[in-house]
Amino acid sequence: MFNFRCVFNSASTLCRQLITPLNVNGTASQCGIRRLPQLRPLFLSAVSHQEAEASTGKDFSHLPPMPGQDSPLRWAGKKFEELPIIHIKATYNNTHIQLTDSAGQSLVRTSCGTEGFKNSKKSTPIAAQTAGISAAAKATVKGVTFVRVVVKGLGPGRLSAIKGLTMGGLQLVSITDNTPVPHNGCRPRKARRI
Amino acid sequence: MARHLRFIARTVMVQDGNVDTAYKNLNRMLTQDGIIDAVKRRRYFEKPCRERRRKNFENCRRIYHMEMARKIAFVSRTNREDPWLGC
Image 1 (cartoon, helix red, strand yellow):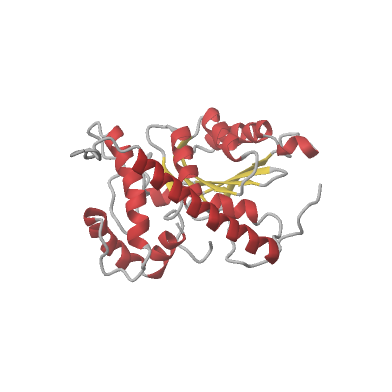
Image 2 (cartoon, chains in turn red, green):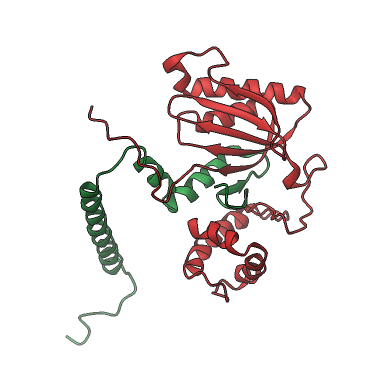
């Protein structure tokens, strides 16, 4: 997925135009990234398997609509790029949920601490679920229905926050993972000896 | 990931409100690409000595598993010519 990202980063529109024939052929085109032919078929096989199961006349692509392409998908009249975003930061001790619009202006902010949990109870999936439900309730008050989700971190509240959002009544359109993975940047803390 | 375009990589669309399947797909993609593994490993610092030993071990393990899978696939073939033909 690193090369997936760097493909789109290096020459985004160019590579997108090259990749749509790559989708069809499944062989290497003139894209300068060497590992791409090995990665794409792996994902294509997963995608085609899913689509074979779900091809009841509706072509659903697991990939999000690109900002350059004009896809006909609309949610509450909005394009994919204009949907509000929910950022979920799932640390090992807490879970924060923040709803922003597509520009980045914050609308709603909840966390396990604002729900009344303290100390070790914040690092539980149940706390994350309550935070999700309350965030969804506040969002529906502001008139938000369809939402994209961005998850950051591998904590206990990662899945249950998403569950809480759906339980609270929001409709999720896509789930992105934005967990920061450094290419050997800062040195983490020393290993615990328990 | 501030330097990258957002919502392109590591993204899964949710089909018909099926959030669990979408999350499972996302998790599968991430584990196959080794991201979950890398994040867990980077939580605490891994000394270079331990890192070298672990990489060596993973290499040996990979070779062993590939060879074993090859062997099993070879041994469990059903349509093969009769080895004792002509005896």
